[in-house]
Image 1 (cartoon, one colour):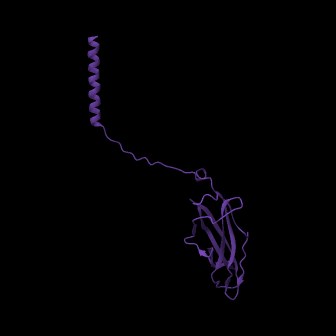
Image 2 (image 1 turned 135 degrees about the vertical axis):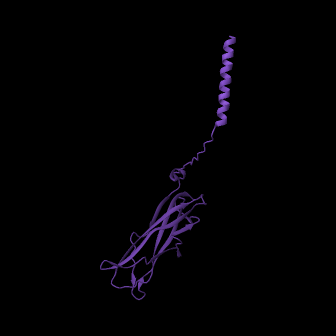
Image 3 (image 1 turned 90 degrees about the vertical axis):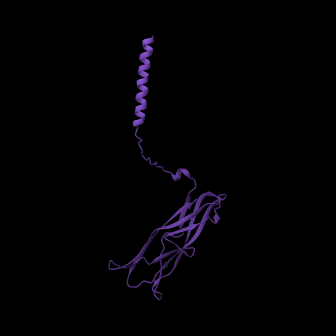
Length: 175
């Protein structure tokens, strides 16, 4: 038994000395871990825009020969949500995704980008416009907004042109 204790003590001393010598030799390893996160906004927030449309599907602009430009044309823009009227801290943003206007003669582009967009008589700034709240409520008690979008034309410098255009307007809730 005495021999067994002695062997165990000798082994324990060797292990302790080995541990102490290795701790002196230890080298720190540094590594940066960059966490990634992803928020699914659809799962995070239940409120949405349920209706976003103009009162006209196609907008036809009339040309004014005296002014040499298209006449201003206004249409109503309706935005409805599923947000109860008790929620007062919700607004919305409108942004222009694309605004293309082009006039051609015999397939050759003569003029382009001549239509400007106004919402409630205000121009877009950097293709964005923010509204702090929804000013009205649907019959069902949900927040809504009705805006007037006006298309205005710059002077058209040529005659005998075929002109057309398209506008893509986006809407999102502001929390």
